[in-house]
Length: 535
Image (cartoon, rainbow, N blue to C red; front, side, top):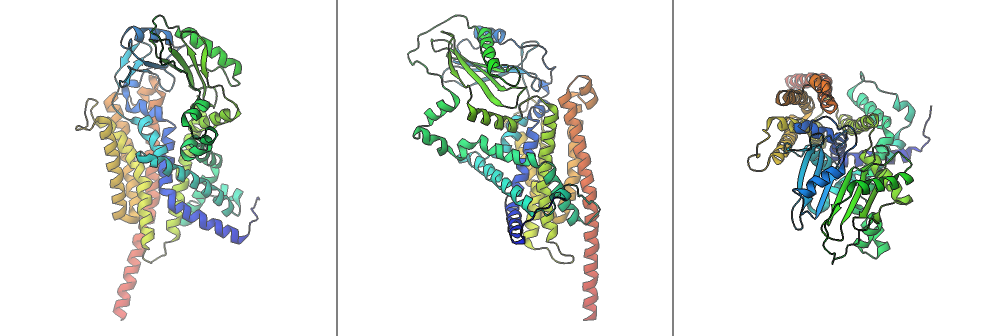
């Protein structure tokens, strides 16, 4: 059996680091892991929360030319910028936006099969709520949210390294789980097992997350090469289009299809992982001689790398004026970013990422529970620090799960035409999320050791209610969704029902502990009564 031969002094030092770094960041870390797990299926959550998006996935290739011709002859004839995103398996609706100089973006979803615009329910759903929550906690001022999440990512790497050194028998710990043992022992087994089962992903997630935002955390490292000139740095890293401020007016046909074909053929010659295909096309300055078409394959569905293919072509001359052809450093960065964002089409890997995120959440929650139970002595009054950590843990763990369920329920209960009592429907959904979450913290503060079970008992009916409300409001119960080919919908419903089952199981396990506590309290009361009589 593999055993780490490390001195006891060093292991004790690592134990101290692991314990106190964990206590310091674990509540936030659970929130980040949990929302990251949901973000793996952010587009599927969008489809669940915006029923108008539930259309059949498009078959065959999408014609950018036809859509651009329609828009340039109609509503976007005076647009300075026009972008069209093709529908995909995960997002069956197409999308376009345009704006005139000095104006705001006009965003429109459309059904590629009928070419008709589609009005969708106002909701931040997954891509605009859970996704940004994961990487910046919706803390916008001064970019503080990015720094908090970055600090937690660094702390995660510290916890992983120190945790590895703590284990005396790392392979044995991987296969050891004793659920019938005392809660302290079984919780530690669960912490060890969940840590080791997805260890590669536990390292990959924080490491790639830090690298994605390197320009936020270490902006000086790249700026020093350009003497602090951020514009020149961005031109070198992302490419640039040189515009003539005195561009002359132009008019005429825009050969979108020809340019897209030309660019895709150029991409294919340097691709090593399938044939890259444009998923977004953007038109700049259509009315003068600066007119250019940017062709992008943000997420190559057949490769890990993200945003590796981006080419801009002059509409006037047909020349390539910007091309993000990557060198070794950029190729590495694109791969690492793609490995974190998981934009590629592989459902097995997507579910594996989801499971890895949930195991990370379980790792954090079980570590906190072990710390709490390791400091409880039978018959003794709990220290204030233990009560505080217990309340924070329950609010952060079961609390945010309950709030997430409340967010889904609110989405199905609030009428699509509602203005959210003046704050906007999407904002009203978010308000309900935070009300439920804050309520969970308050409940945990008052109920102490019973909060875990009670909040688990609340999570189960909320999850079931979300499934029932989806059925009532849309008619898409799991069987109907399966018959219609709406895999995203029935999968999410079944996941919610499975989550309800897990919550009930967790409540049942903690119920046994609650009965033991009541018995111990009765014994303590009887001892004190007997002592008073003898005195």
